[in-house]
Length: 295
Image 1 (spheres, rainbow, N blue to C red):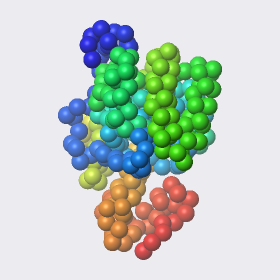
Image 2 (image 1 turned 90 degrees about the vertical axis):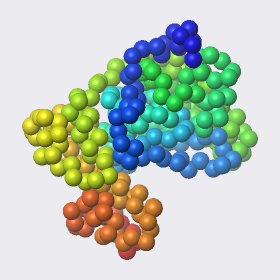
Image 3 (image 1 turned 60 degrees about the vertical axis):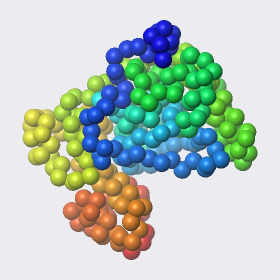
Image 4 (image 1 turned 135 degrees about the vertical axis):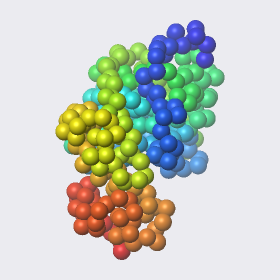
C-alpha cells in the first residue's frame, strides 16, 4: 500500500496491534485451522461467554468481532483492548490474539473471511487494501455509534440466514466484509492499554507448551516480586495468574485429545501440565459445568 493510501485510511501510525514479529517461539502460538466448509468463503456466528479462556492463536483468515452486550478484552500483541457494546475489532493473519476478561453476559458477532475475500476487496478499492495485509500497522479497534451498531447487527442476521445457499452466503460474506470495513472507517477511535512488560512476559511464558511457569519463576523472569506481578496481571488481563495458567492447561488438554484421542483422560491431563487428575477434574468442571466424558 502506498503512503498516500495509508494516509487516506489513517493507518500510518506506529505499530500498535500485532507488534510481535519474531518475539515468540512459534510453538507457543496456536495456528488455528478454522472449520469453514470448503464451499464457503467465510463464516459468521454469535459468540457468548463460555467460562474458559482460549489459547493465544492466529489463523489465515481476516477476522472482525462486533460486541453488542456485556464486556470483554482482547490481548493483541503487547496491547489490551476493551470491548463494550459497539466495539469493532479487526484481527489479521499475522496477529496473535486472545479474548480474556469476558463478563457472563458478553455477546458478540464473529466474522471471518478467507484470504480470497480480502484480496478481492483490495483490488476493488484502495480503502480496502489493508484487509489483504498480514500484519498492518495501526490500531484496528473502534466504536461504532448506536445507529451503525443496529444496522450491522441486522446485517449479521441477514448473512447468517443465507447459510443453506453457498452462493448467496458467499456473496453476503463479501458484502458484509465491505460494509463492516466502511463502518469501521467511519467509527470513533478507542483507547488501548499497553501491557506492562512484565505482564506481557508472563502471558508469553504461560502460553508456552512447557508448564514450568510457577509464580516464583514468573517473578524471577520479570524482575518483579510475586505480589506485584500478581496485582499487575490481574489488573491488565482480568483474571488471576492461577486461573490463566489453568485455562492454558485446559486448552492444551483439549488439543492433546484432538491430536491423540488414544490418550486416556489422566495421561492427557498430566501431559497438559496439571499436577494431578483431581486438580484437572476440578478445573474442568469449573469451566464446563460437568465432568469430562471418555476414559
